[in-house]
Figure (cartoon, rainbow, N blue to C red):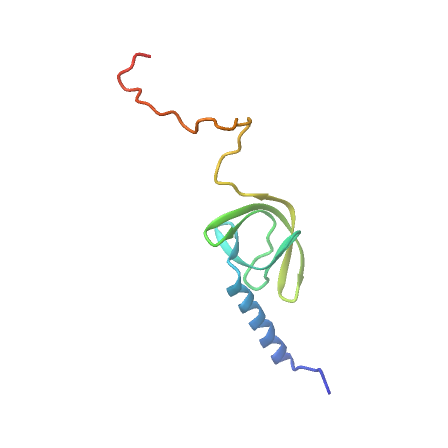
Length: 121
C-alpha cells in the first residue's frame, strides 16, 4: 500500500488544518493596530499563519477574545509549513489594575466614605 498523496490533496489538508485552528482559538495578536489569529501557542511562544501575518518583531499584545491577556516582546524564529513561529523574549501578564508599590494590610478600607462639601479645610 502506498502512502503517497498528491500535492493538491496535501495543500487541501493543510488549508483545512489552518482553517480549523483559526476557528478553534480565540487568541489574537495585535501589532500596529492589526489583529492576527494565533494558530498554536506553547510556553515559549506561538505560531501565526505565514500568508496573513507579516514578519513580526518587537512588542505585541495578545488577546483572548476581547480580554487583554498579555504583552509580549517577541522575535520571529522560523517559518515552516506555512507558519511563522515566534519566541518570547518577555511575556508579561496584563492586569486590569495598577501595580501597588506597597503592601495593603488585611481589612484595610477600600475607599473613604463621606461628604466633604461645606466643611472647612
